[in-house]
Amino acid sequence: MSEAPANMSRPIPAPMVSVETKPFWDAAAEGRFLIKRCAECGKAFWYPRNLCPFCMSTETVWEESPGEGAIYTYSVMRRSPTGPYAIGYVTLDEGPAVLTNFVDVAPDGLAIGMRVKVKFQPTEGGPPAPVFAPA
Ligand SMILES: [Zn+2]
Image (cartoon, rainbow, N blue to C red; front, side, top):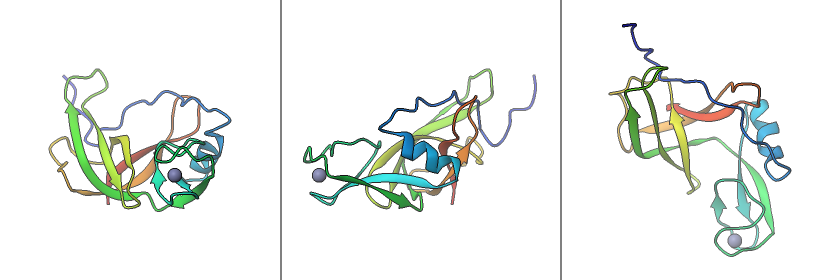
């Protein structure tokens, strides 16, 4: 049995890029993390979409985020052909919760409330995908 990689990264399939999400993926390719904010009610939200999930306004704008936040919850998948990996939710400092993969951390190194920061991981033939690592 081979030693499991400690960074918990795993192959990520190419994301589906739509007209609605293209600005996000274009920015991701430049290492920039974008979220959406509603110009009507002022709330930031995730995932990026044209319609505000809080007030249904279509007046939404892209905003660059430092991609920093805290782990809300997580789960480590220990039995995987590519080695252990972890998924969970990060609460961004702007408010929205992001479902994501955690990388650059040992399976036992995660904790609820831990500060994390976005980074981008190459995907299989698509734009890089946001993942989170300890800040
Ligand atoms: Zn709104």
